[in-house]
Length: 87
Image (cartoon, rainbow, N blue to C red; front, side):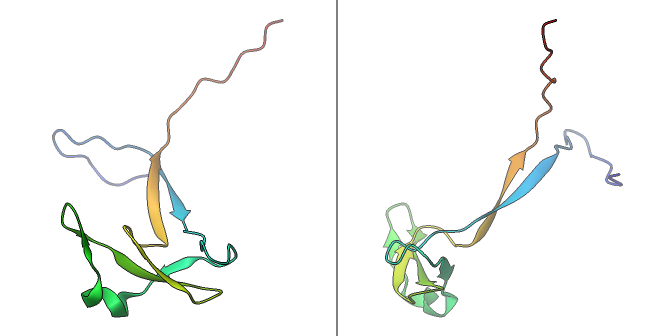
């Protein structure tokens, strides 16, 4: 049970965390991992966001991606009524 008491205008929403990985485009076996050691060298894309260097966990090739991988996203859990069978 949640002990948090929402403040005015806050609503508690049930969420499910999901992990997202980026599969290597070179070997299709490994997954790209953010390489923070190269952060100062990252180019900036239009809109002011930097591209992030990543290295493959398998083949070790590198590439620039617009997001940090692996990452966690949250999906809202929506309650759906169970389907009723017609009898």
